[in-house]
Amino acid sequence: MLTQEDFGQLLCFVFERRRIMAGLKIRYTYINENGVEAKGSKTLPKDTTAITNDIFDIEERVNVVTVVVPMGITKIDRWAFYGFKCLLNVTIPKGIYTIEDFAFSGCKKLLKAIIPEGTWRIGICAFEGCEKLSNVKIPTSVKRIAAKAFNGCPKMKHFIRVSRDTVIDYEAFHGNYDRIRYYDS
Image (cartoon, rainbow, N blue to C red; front, side, top):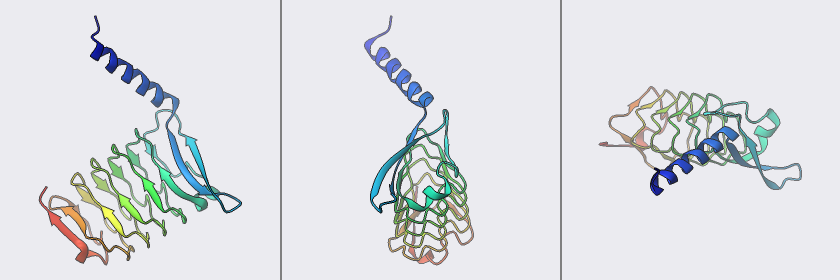
C-alpha cells in the first residue's frame, strides 16, 4: 500500500513526465513591428534537452530582447544565440551542464551572465563580442573555460571569481586577466 508521501512523489513524477512529454516552452520578449516590447513563447519538440540555433528564425533573432530557458534543458548548444543583436538578458536555469562554443557570441547588448551551479564547461568563444557584458558569475562547478570564451568583452568591471581547480584556456578572458580572482573550491 502506498503511503501518503509515496503517493505525493508518484504524482510529482507523473506531472513532471507529462510536462516533459508535452514539450517545454521557451519564453521570450521581443520588439514587434510597431516598436513595442511584446511577449512570446515557443513550444520545443518533445524530449528536447538542448537549446539549438534553429529555435528562432533569422528575422526573430534580430528582435529578441530577453529569453527564459526552461528547466529540463541541459545544454546551450553551439551558435544557439549567436548574433542576437538586441538580447539584453538570458535566464539560464540550474541543470545546464555546458554552454557550448559560440553560444552567445555576437550578442553585443548582453549585459549580464549568471551561469548556474552545475555548469561544468564554457565553450570556445561562448561570450565573444558581448561588448556590453559587465557582470559575470562563474560557479565553482565550472571545470573548464575554453579559449576566447570572454574575448571582446571590454565592459567587464566586476571581478571574475574562478576556482583554482578551473582550467582556463588560452585568452579565455582576453583583456580582462587583471579582473580574475581565484578561490579554493
